[in-house]
Length: 176
Image (cartoon, rainbow, N blue to C red; front, side, top):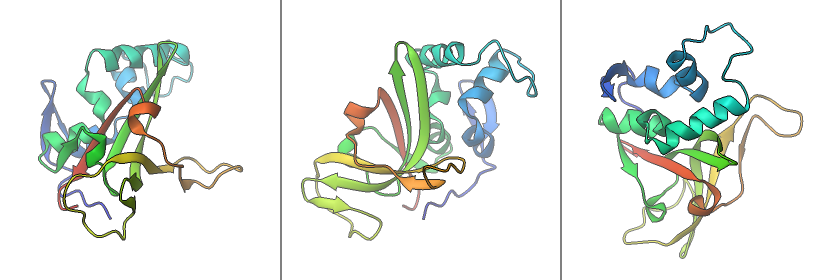
């Protein structure tokens, strides 16, 4: 179980004051709506589809801290520790990943559910492992709106995050 201590803690990200709650709830579309002053109810925005994905790619390449999502929010607020080496990933860590294809980004925030290592598979029941491990795959818990072909929450198969994702950001919440 992941516990976040203070969702109302005030943090400063790129010179802007916000709360952990607000920052964590900002999705890519919200970022773009604010940046381009697009009204919330407007369905067809100038940044829909490919234009939005191209702008997300620009933000990623520019190193915009908001693209780290939960990792940035928890790290800046002191409620988590950034994980930047895949060999340090463990079950319960939060991961924001991005894929870029044809200069168009798409991404998702997930929870790492299982980690495949050189010493076997770690899951939420695994004993804490001391010493270095070689991680060769992670299984992530993903949630989507209910669809007929898949349950709303499911574990994706093992992938190597360095091979599968163009960019990823991970955080281990404090107390995990």
